[in-house]
Length: 368
Image (cartoon, rainbow, N blue to C red; front, side, top):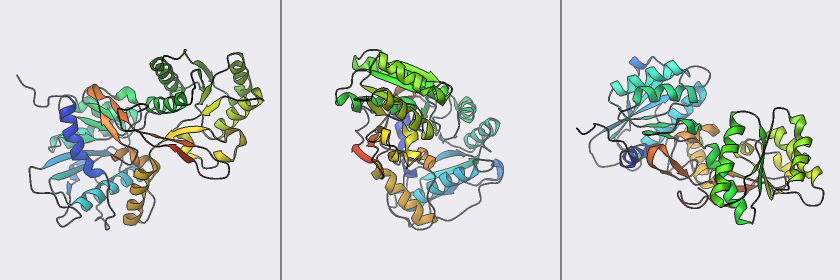
């Protein structure tokens, strides 16, 4: 007996094409505002008005459940994602696409109820929710009924019929290790906090080194930034070509200075994560000058930021990019929830913004 929703890339790609309408691709006028903070039962669907930017031909309609925290602590971010989704539909004028916004309230139980409400109202795919705990509950409701495109960056949630759209630790590590390897780096090390993020970086670095045929990396964890000098001395005993620093902000500064002090002649190349994008002052730290880190291609992100600002007179939150194909770089869906993402590589420059040194590769190519 044929299943109603046969899983695989073909179905996912169809739904992703549907979701691609969430990607703003041209400046658009102000989208009409609606209040979607009411209980799920009272939320009305939203479709693009006729006469938008690039009106699509008439055809069968498709509904996407948009699972967002429209109330609770993450409501500002949820509203920003909803604004941009409406903006994109308004711009394209594609009346075949219907958004069904449902409030997760920022809780796991709310996400489950939001998913059930959207599916009951005819959604053929779910976009969202935001967090690990919410995603687990929404996936439980949607399994076997509709594909889920979650906004979390926790790739442990990915699987058959579930794609994680946030920028994951493994995507970051693959990209930055590939870039370093192109300059001759073969021996890698990790200096990271002893937490879930650090552990995922370690798993990803081991896998990336293995794929390169490089030696197993040296993994150093710390629960206290005061341990940086000790970890740096361990690096001296096994000098790496490149060190991935799993800290942002003050932690990144402390690690870089400790490594610079331990290697007075020539320090290994320093690598970072997307955490570094949140701190524009890191380039002012001499020990971090020239350090590399991965991030979304600036062209797609700048286009999204400009359109959002034009329509809503405010800057979109950084995390809002997870909801929109293209804003955080090109992606390619793979089987069983796999996803390949193109990320650029940036270098920290003293006293200025980070400079892109390598553009984002096409998904599926080296480093993606």
